[in-house]
Image (tube, rainbow, N blue to C red; front, side, top):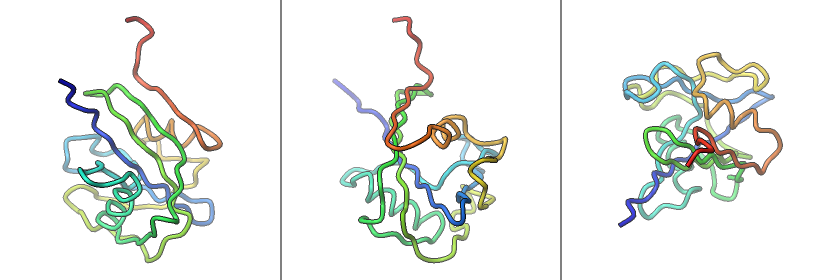
Length: 144
C-alpha cells in the first residue's frame, strides 16, 4: 500500500521586483521563518486551484486560474517524502493582509536579490533556482 506523498503549493506574487513573503508562526512547522503564501493541495483540487485558495485564505489576494503559471517543483526529503509546486501569479488583485494570524505574524514585500536570512531553506533554494521551469531534489542522499 502506498500512502501518497504530501503535496504543497507556494505562490510567488511580485510587485516592482519585490516578492510577497509571510513569516510563519504558531504552527510548529518552520515558525519564525519567512516563506511564500501557500499550503497543502486538498483532495479534489488541482495545484492551481489550491494556490488560488491558499492565496485568498492567507492574504486576501484574488487570482484567476489562468493567471497562475508553473515555475518549478521541489522534491524534498523532510519529515517525510514531499513534493512542493511553485507557481507565479502573473496578475492578482487586492492588497495583501494577514488573514490567518494564528499561522502568520508578518507579511512583507522583499527584494528577490535580498531575501530575509530567516527564510525556509527549500523556499530560498526555489527562489534562487533561476529561470523557469526548474526542478530541485533536496535532502536526498546518493547512498541507497
